[in-house]
Image 1 (cartoon, rainbow, N blue to C red):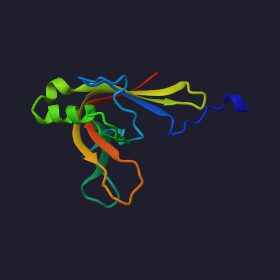
Image 2 (image 1 turned 30 degrees about the horizontal axis):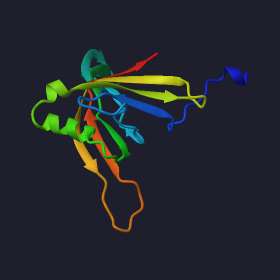
Image 3 (image 1 turned 180 degrees about the vertical axis):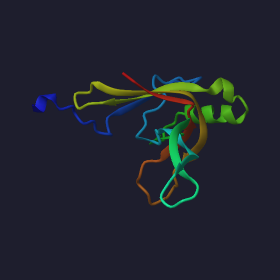
Image 4 (image 1 turned 30 degrees about the vertical axis):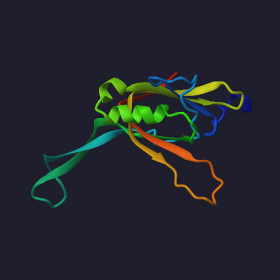
Length: 160
């Protein structure tokens, strides 16, 4: 019975693939954190009055129906330990210079099980950077310097 139960995936075994222009590194970035993957659908509420009378009311019965509206994909935020690589910054800079249409990139997020086998894969398309943040500095600090980038994505899908 226990063997048929699917393994619950932990959120610390993931890999994000994102290939950028001008990259000299085999991997553009290893990310420590990824947040904001959200794909939602708006709810449109339609209200109509029927001719059927309700209770002691002299007018019709109000019926509310909820129907699906527009689909929305949120921006995602990627965080990593800062390295000497300026690839993420150059991507952000290229978009700021007005070259955003040519800078849209596709990528994927893969989540692995404990045996390091891929179990869930999410693909995103049309990504471009919205903001770039470097963590605060302190002369007495010993924490890693963190580089954070928020990216807008147009399409977000879960693959088999």
